[in-house]
Amino acid sequence: MARVPRPPVIAVMGHIDHGKSSLLDYIRKANIVAGEAGGITQHVAAYIAEHNGRFVTFLDTPGHEAFKALRTRGAAAADIAILVVAADEGVMPQTLDALAAIKEAGIPFIIAITKIDKNNADVEYAKTSLLEHEIFLEGLGGDVAYALISSKTGAGVPELLDLVLLAADLAEITADPSLPATGFVLESTQDPKRGASATLIVKDGTLVTPGFVVAGDAYAPIRFIEDFRGARTARAGASEPARVSGFNKLPPSGALFRTAKSKKEAETLAAANAKTLAAPHQQNALIEGAVSLPLVVKADVAGSVDAINHELAKIVDERAAIRIIASGVGTVSENDIKTAHASGATVIAFNVGTDPIARELAQRDAVVILPFSIIYELSEKISELLAARVPAMTIEKELGRGTVLRTFSSGAKKQVLGVRYASGTFTINDRVKILRHGEEIARGSIANLQQARADVKEIKTDGDFGTEIEARSDAAPGDELIAFAAVKS
Image: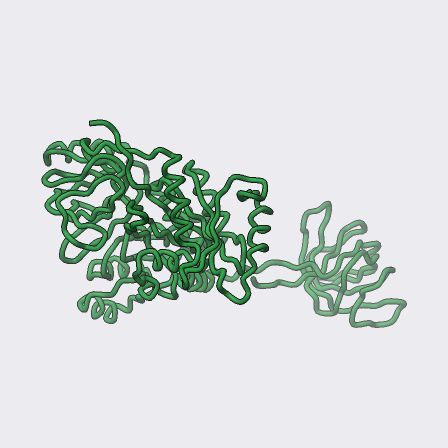
């Protein structure tokens, strides 16, 4: 069968709180913002909308920096991107991060300047901000199409969708419905009733029952297909999101999927993929003598686990390191608590609850379970826990430096020296060390100081001075005398 045009798959991307979800809310006439902690989208989801009799599939990708992996995955699965930029803030760090993902995916993009209805909106500032980052808009020296959007009133949304369809026509996006389905795993989750499930984006062909779907080293029988609304459907065509349950293990988010006719064929394909994916598991490398913060990570979806690992990898210290003992998707279980107890780990529960038995076991064994629903709050807490584990380190801070000119007297433990001041301050009772040719030969303390034959408490000016120090080894002319303090850090 010949290839025919298919609906475009659109990734909506940009900085946190720049209006991505609000835009999709208006397009779908549905509200998903209320379901996200802190109003921040933290999962990738797919939705179908209709405009001028044509369908468009939208991917809602997180804007928080920690979800770079998900955002990049969204761009890779998409045909076109909408890069949202708020009129009141302009280009921000994650705007550029999203743009980098778009460019890496090699897909066309459209700018949506959002929040134009706000009192402090400054569209010209937003345009200038884009130009300063070499995003050249149409009419301003470039060819990047843009639309001015208010997700509250809907102003500009039809024009944006027109631009999306025009970009799709120019890109000549096609599919062959007669082929077996291929595409991407957009997200995977562990459902208590259905087991391992995945949201697939069909990029070519048609997904039908019966059969098997293989994604990475995971596979599942296609017993039924659900559309993006959760309704069962007999088939999913190109560009359509499809939910399939019953995988033998969680399929990797972002993995390519294909279909197989039999379980044997599916197992063979999964085994071949497993060999390709096989790589030594790398934990955070620990510096010799450093302490570790062991963690067991549980999250609601595989993409969240990826994002948490991405965020935790940025928390580093020379004397301590985070060590992921185990991670997975689903409710905190009895086995998770046993694993944490055996390794002295803290359990991270991101958007998941804890089984009653697991909670009772955690209380009995004093295993700490930390629940989170917002990624940066998780990051801040883990940073605090790691800092608390960092052992105190004593360093020597130089206070004063001088050169020994003469030895006036010396005894078993005390000696009187003539010293030429070089820098810093010498104070009675300071700890001192004697260096000869750069090598330390003795340590002691200052018992007395004299300048111009008068006893003084400190020396901090140029000139020669006398000092009595308590040290077991004798100093000699030319040696360096260094006053220091031990400081814990």
